[in-house]
Length: 254
Image (cartoon, rainbow, N blue to C red; front, side, top):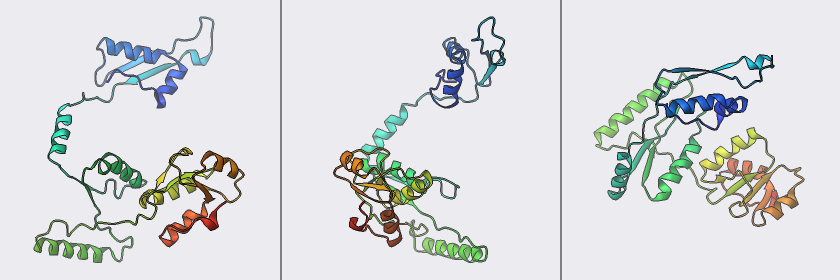
């Protein structure tokens, strides 16, 4: 019920078909005639009088099914006070156990908006259950024993397992050139996990490594575009991941 017509997604498709739904929705907002649960039946009457096409007898139904809260400015005051008091942020591993959840992308956002601004941020990695049914009961008993032991010792964080990933890709900014999406998606998860970064464009000021297939025909053009970056075979990254360290790029240069 915000009264604002979005410019992307399904709304962009509707606007491409006809401007009438956007016009009517905006008008209803100006007249303060938008309420939760309302249904607006809008005719796409944008055809001529003599037109006899099926597309000229179409309607769009807009259902007001979501309420947009006005911004609470006390949140800004809270953020300001928290910063003055040097508050710290404590988070579980967001989305753990959710199928298809991109944790590494979330971790980059936490780094960008919290830790990079000097806000101490702690993320707790809880012990995972075994994938096999036979060991499930043993793991649960072990976890319970460990938890009781931590309480007896009077510590808070003993029942949390902090996972420290190696940072051997720190400072590495990678651009994937003509790499299929599945391969790119698989590898960039490792890049983020080991403190590297992936650029969507070949920015000569930030790119350090350009990864391409062995049969790439654009090597000279890539070197001209990013003279400070090394153009190497994508096998270099697979080798780094398998060996757990950043390897020399000499033998992988294209």
